[in-house]
Image (cartoon, rainbow, N blue to C red; front, side, top):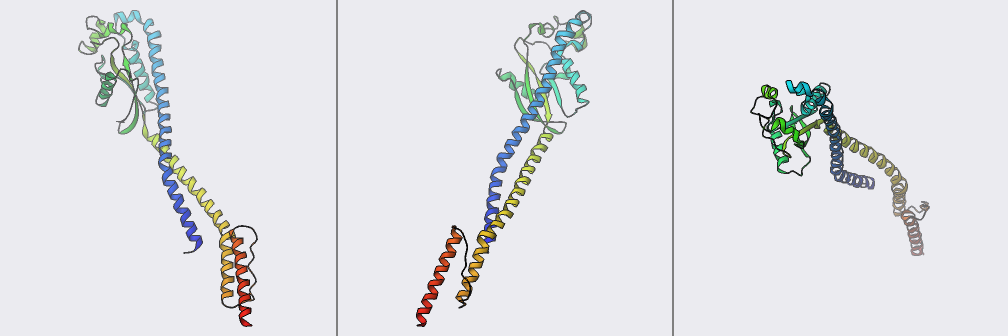
Length: 290
């Protein structure tokens, strides 16, 4: 096995070792960046939903207050407005998911199901928890899901949700008297659930990882070629010439010129030592001939 091959094998092993040690941290960093991007998307969607809720409560409710006393209008309910707007939004971006789920909702469509109930119970058990992050399967796709507690902060909400006799008759007529009652002030009655698909983020992670491996491999190959050129010029070529000179001298050819390699590095020092050894050998042979 030649010196060049040994050198290249050592470099390749070092590269593969370094690459294997760096892939996992790079993957984790890329994944965290992707999660941060997903969370940023959720923050925007939540801000949009909160804006719709606020607009409904501050603008729509007062405007339709007189009509609501005669006929219950779901459009005046912030939760209904936000979810309706988001259903329209999903017409453009169906991969996103938004729901204001409750354990005991007035509208049966808002009833928490399966994992939604588990998340709400988790928020109810810990009043200090302002957000829960999980990964859920929605429409056969993995989603990054952020859940925020819906807490009764306004006592006016209890007008419709304490007991059926206090609620507007038109609301009871529309939704019945079985659901959406018994709520209490400062109680977590549900959760605002926002989900964005993971596959886009995962695709970005693997693209970045592939780009990292590909770029580092190209850089390694370029450096390997340059190092081989330098190795050949400053190490292999001088050593090969020195070996040929030594072989010729060992065969008794005294006409071979001395090997000269300028500089002060190890190869130059070796060449000078070799030449001194050769001159000493020539002197010894001449003394023996006498």
